[in-house]
Image 1 (cartoon, rainbow, N blue to C red):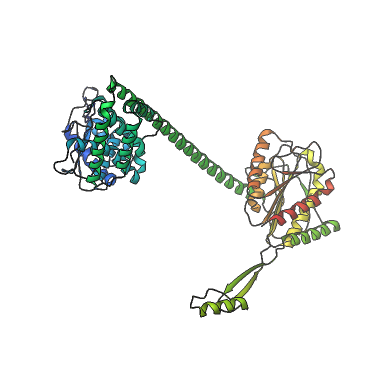
Image 2: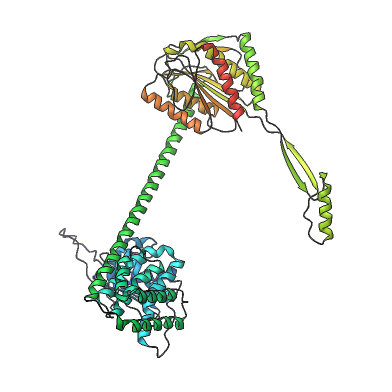
Length: 596
């Protein structure tokens, strides 16, 4: 099969990178040097192996070609000839085809190269001696879209490059036709509409050529030609007989219809205009797709950066929370600043006292309620087996005997065994953050009592249960620390502080009690009227959202109707401060009951 030809434009060559070092003159202008393209041709040859699946081909790249076409595949020589001018305005030292992805900088040139690779892989049939040249040319015309469609089957990602190369390959053939009249319109249909049916171009993009060809050729002849190139697309790579038969059918259809079809005046201009419209639409589609891909890539990069920032921020927050928890839950229960440094004054703790009989009774009741809520029924797992141990199922045993008597492989399993396993009871984690600014003085006694009751009950319920209480204003003070031991005395405190620091109090309780980690009944109780500034509220709500997302229940207790609601918390208004211990106990019981 002779080499197929396309026509192309624009010279370009290697740049001479020498500079004048003595007088500061600008870089020397590029000079033509065909030898500089040898490396580019060699690297194209390396990539051709992957594109065509063949290792016996040579690629020559130089300005201009022997055939006069932008590129050509010579099957008898095992050579692909490539015009270096397709890379314009790039110079040889800027082109590195061996690097995968470098082709994105010269998509049109790469598309032509992919087209030639498709010929090298699929145009392997040879014309027999004495074949009609006109029939051979018709078969080669059908071959253009056939090989691109076959190439897409194995390398669908090359579609973008084949679309880009269509302007380079098709437009010159339309502007400088070798065929005239009806045959010229038929050739344009084969080159454009054939690529449409091969999946290279879209139907909407080719409508201008389809409408013009239907007007020139007539609906019947266009349908016949469409059937011929569609059948050629299914032809095997080595089947020269079938391809020549399609070429003969092509010629016969044109010969039969041509006498009755008038040739419109200025047909070449009409075809050039229609094809230009197709290529413009294709270019616009490709540009839109590229813009969409860039936008998606940018959005993904932005999301990745945002996720990285979030991870870094969470890591910093965890480190800061660990430092805060370490400083707050100190052995001496001293008041600290949010950064962990000791505060010289402002400790709200007024002392300790022995628990009352009512508090001891309430702790005992809460402990029993927590044990009841934490109880889990034993799980049962029923299994069957063909052999003991287990309980014999007579129906399954008879079925097994029947299977064996019938000569089949026995599948019945007559022995049944039930395994019962105890489900572990979940421990409890309760953190209490109490606002000790001046407006919360009424909550001091009931919250102190509630903190002792909950801590005592949790320690009696499960040795792995832990609670902690932090009093916060602008400073942080640990009233009870996260320990497995039940507190002996009630820590009393007063509310005389100013400002608020709930966010750091939550961080310390979260780190000290692992409120963000599953596997335990987790509850955070915030006793506050929430009269905060906007920045304080935002920081607190962010921590609350993180806890609720992790599955920790968050309860806000308020004492006055003027109290504000912190978003994300379950608000519980207590007109009587003395009911705070019961409310906290109920919330703790519900938290452990919901644990799975």
